[in-house]
Length: 221
Image 1 (tube, rainbow, N blue to C red):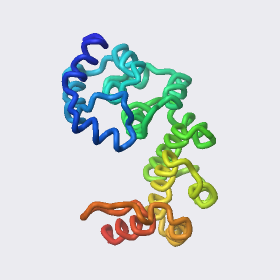
Image 2 (spheres, rainbow, N blue to C red):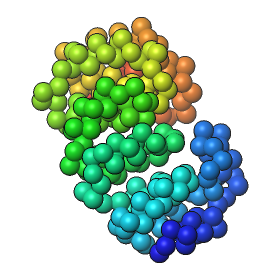
Image 3 (tube, rainbow, N blue to C red):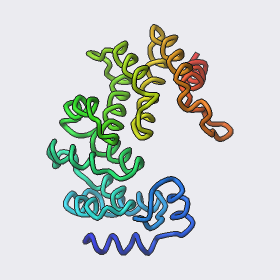
């Protein structure tokens, strides 16, 4: 398929109710309102098509960029292009799909993580903390967990919302996985109060780190 054919299909699948909901969530007007399941169905049909993926990304259309992350071949994107693309991501959801389906499979992800942990660009910082949370969970060797807590304590309260979210994930993961750091992680969460009043649906766990840590630890015990 060509990029124009895919965009035409996305436009046809657009739903005003989905578009309105996405708009309320901060997506903006450069979207059609396509359901996520429909995007995944298109990706399953097309399979990996790296040139098409890059063309879809460059459209700047919300659903086209999401779809592109499912069609990319991570090994075919150089380090500098990943860095540039991450910095230009327009929404948190596009950022998270790009992180999950492309960056976490990229050969340079650790070098990118290290660079982004020092970035003042909010989306890059979001990616850096997301990749760090993955390391906290799966491969903590070489990480300074106390140092990460120092940074979270110092920076999370005033961080931009898009990076604050993944910093909070990192805080919770440290508290959940490492009993020796749990008390401090909970105290940091209580002191900063980030997401204390976050609206949470019935049956879901609050993202407020102390509540989240205690809920998961109690569930595991």
